[in-house]
Image 1 (tube, helix red, strand yellow):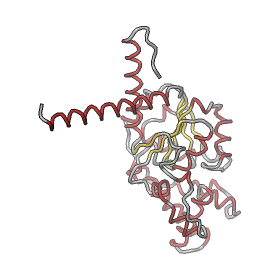
Image 2 (cartoon, protein in one colour):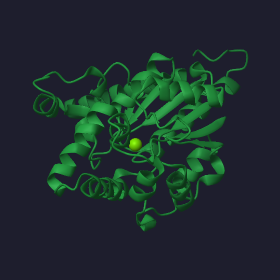
Image 3 (cartoon, protein in one colour):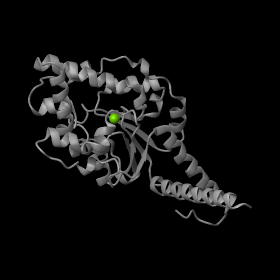
Image 4 (cartoon, protein in one colour):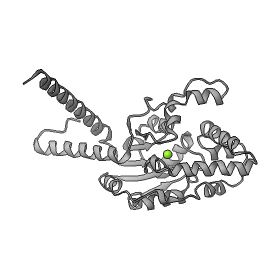
Length: 288
Ligand SMILES: [Mg+2]
């Protein structure tokens, strides 16, 4: 064997060992999970669909009408509220600027859903997950139903918990998670949460859930999720430090992926490999 071939073989062996260790980590982390909690926008569908861009644009238009300002000012307020209050809607409520939250939700979700196509691969991945599946969204129930219908995965979801069900207190606020857990009766240690916004995983992590950040490069919020230090510095009077929970590499994130379906597929393959190991080696208990 040539020196080059030996190096290639060593590299391949090293990569296989690394992949094996990662699969083992996946198996161990998800072994107790029977409650699968999914954020909706930019998580259950890919950010490259640009659906949330439409909602983002509608929020700007709503603020133009509400405050009678130009679009640049409206966008500034929108992003400022998103950072400070969790969502634009929460900022409007806290500041007493809106009488009817449902009017806002209906307006911003009046969008074209044709960008979302049926997703048989996601349908298949969800089929393979054992346990209950939930959608926990800062959007409205009607919006979540429309997206799930377009994706063709409605039948998998046991229940949608929307921002109205949370008393209009959105993620990442602890009260939103209190409401969600009280309503569903989920034991956090048996639950995994999938999200595209890093800070929304801080509470799930603190409560003992397994956390997965779904961060696609096309996600406009990814900048917020992984590097908003400058934005904080500019908008919040010199707070130059990025909040640790906005950090996509923060300790509150157990796993990160650019795409949900591929992650779920890898997980179920790792789990199946593990169970066939256990069957093959009779009498030998699963190491994890
Ligand atoms: Mg989202």
